[in-house]
Image (cartoon, rainbow, N blue to C red; front, side, top):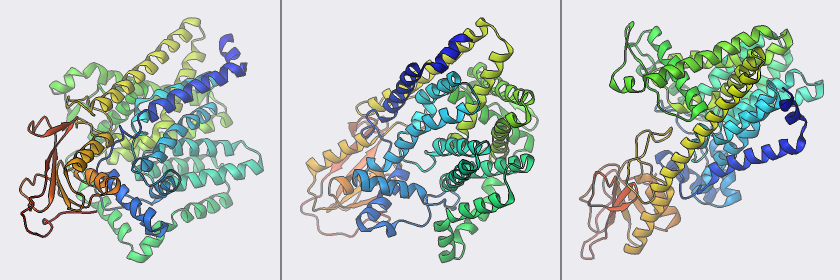
Length: 543
């Protein structure tokens, strides 16, 4: 393969390709970042918390981070720290809260390239970087603020630093091990499933290979626990409330699924894994789960319509895992250690998802994405070395180009729908964050706020009601950026005290009488000048 060797030795060409990869990745993640920013209830909650901290100091940040699902258990506060620093650097604006996720989304590209370079020749590592650059999966989760979003960077950086430590000289080994422990401590603040699966895989790897000394393990554990200081402080002050919430969630009905047998959970988790890998590789969401009823399979009409793609995703997933396992057998003892770590990590993640197979969401896979990249590239390397022919190389190159083009198409469609959401109520396709919901962005909420500014006097409070996903978001925009004050109500409340301004928001497709603002409609009702004073409506919220 002389052309690949030429590429590896041509520094100018490498720099050109890297520049193209990074420029494309930055553009797809940063294009119209503010106007097309997703701002739902979770992001509005963070905006309220950070506004208070930026006004009154770092000590006003909570000791715990966002809630994990609806379990009552809360993660560490690292995501709030990132947002706080961003607010200090870039100003007290709503979009500044999303800058850390944008930055980590961009940094995930070189982190993935560096990780792949430990396993594959430079051309394959660059292809992996190109795929990460245009990945619909990664782009989607880089364009809004959410605590799991930085996981691809942190898990890729952890795997790279830990594996680099295994073959580094003593001085560098200490640095890489320290870096990997700090990164693992950060991951503990971002997502529980990512942490648990990575710790299980790491523990198994250390036990099987004995690559760490007892001293290194103890010291690493101490540093990791030190990274959780805010969580421990909160537990001390609340007498272990968060831990009790974790135990209650673990032993509660939500994760004690008695309706499905273990074989059903295994099958469901396997399908979910194949769909996540398929989305990563192609950007396509054209698969559906094949349902189980005991030991029988069921494929309703919607499943049948996508059955070829579903089977293709399952075949692709199985092939990638099989080829990676086969390549493990062909490597020497020292060479197989990095790949063994990736496989143990992936296997541990799969086992964890079996327990929550019917609760899995796409975000669960953010932490395992770097391992998926390694397995895809490792499988490609196995095929290219086993079938040493020009036709094989051209075939792999053709498939690789299709994967990149398919992701570009999916990413373009996603961005185009974010653009159209500003002025059109047209239904959009399903995506990784919104599902089948209409897309609503910060640009639309600001347009509604400008409409309120033109109609309402700011001395009078405003009550916002309607679409529950966005009433808090509009409240944040009105109060933090436009100087209004008031409160919000979830759900329909068309009859309210007349001495308050009222904004009612809903989907215009369901309420054509509303003034359209793209995929969100609004009705503005100014206060009645003759109305007397009345108290706040019941359940009207400001937090």
